[in-house]
Image 1 (cartoon, rainbow, N blue to C red):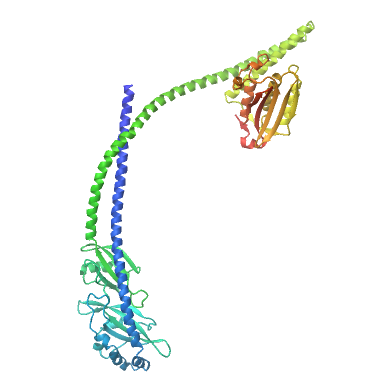
Image 2 (tube, rainbow, N blue to C red; image 1 turned 180 degrees about the horizontal axis):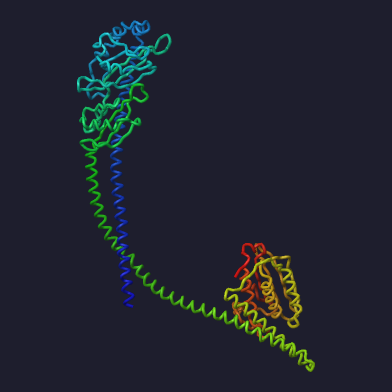
Length: 591
């Protein structure tokens, strides 16, 4: 006992340790996943907040730009309708164009910035203006100082071929010296002919652009404009500008955000196009957000989460230790019960194997005995038949010999039944299914019943149509023969036997009933046992194998035999067979 309990305890301890380890792995995995998701969520939320701030500032910028551009466009439209401007353009008096425009645009060019830096909308002060001819080419001014000085390469960027039919927004990168750069917003408005309603020229006005985040963005956030492969972001070092230029080399969409590494650390970069659907080169508003502070807050929060996670893991370890101890208790009992059940199963298997061997030996003995008994009985019957033909025998002697011969037939019948039962017990009985006409078989068995010399005279009633069943004719006949013999033997004088059969679904149901003493209730559950003979048949010849053999054969055919009723001078049995259309489903043979 000690030798078996020690491995059991060792196995249970190992199970408890494994259970504890698995629980800790699960808790650790869930905690690690939670930390990872929390960190990801923190970073995602931070980026989304920054992007929402950027989108809000850009929306505010566009709103201010829209008002600014609307006011400037209205001034340009008023200017474009001036008769002196139209006359100079339509009469091709281009030498009078800029002098006439000078008087009309004097207030726009000379107006000082009356709005303070805190104003929401900047003043409408033009830095320069130019006219485009009908082909969209810049018309050279006579005096550049009056209209705003531009370098030739800058002036060439204002060309729009052909002249636009609608207002266009663009941006112009200008150099104030060797290193200073500024970006001006350019608005081009068409001048429409009064005669043809077609654009004959355009006026291009350059103004100071509205700055992004003039009031709300934090000072650490830097913004600028990307134009024609160049970045205008003076607040960023040249080395960082080179990195930004490489990142913005070819914008593939109107707006986007991504992370970028600059010299002073990671940044989040947002950009959005300022002049969509414009014939001027696309310009993008760019904002870069330094992430050092955000990452520092994330690290602090991560360490806080890790500390909390460590405390949770220690608590989980204690809980897992307690839970594994509680969970291993039923396993301990299960292991103990399993050992007992295993021993009991081994004993049961040994007993079952012994019983199987005994049953096989019994079946072999029955089969061998049945075969061995057939020969002497056949010899005995032959001797009695020869003796009955002897001339010196009296009539009484012949009758006695006839009785003996009849008993040899009964012995042969018992031997055949025992042989059949032994084959069924050994599983060697083969049923070859075919279509059997049950009605014809019943008629043949009733003819044999009426030809028997002994027994009770009874009236036979039959109500059977043309029913075809699936079975083997010999064994079906044996079932019917046993039932009819029982109905005859256990009948009362002058009684009756009723036979009926019907189809019900896939089944053929045969019922055989007879008058006579009913079977007592305590005996009914034993009538199908072998060699059982109840008190009803104590004075009737038989060996107690008929009903058992008939039921086993019925079950081998896929049906069954049962006692339907036995009361009030009437006993009735029911046997079920499969109809002939079920032969294919059964498969032809059953062992």
